[in-house]
Image (tube, rainbow, N blue to C red):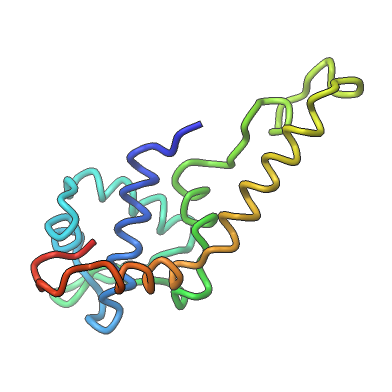
Length: 145
């Protein structure tokens, strides 16, 4: 189970926005440049983030994207599930049914594993990652996570 580039880039972009929260709405072009990510790819990522209520868009010369809620009210789990879908280590603990469901000796393990992953992802806020980034990002204004 690996997080795709969509999830990784989306999380980086959200931290980038949080680091620059006082700048107001930010154009995707600016995030793309700072992060070294294709702007067209970020458009796809931000479509999912917007549909899931994590960012809001504004139009016009001062338009762009901004967080829909404070960074401490957005979890990494919300971001990754918006971009990747639910984290399910095996199909039988997701939405699909399995004929062994009632007597499988490992199903409870997989369900607990899924729950622990989600607990961890939901225990880390965007603000937590932003605070970590502030500690490791060089002071060069041209370099942002």
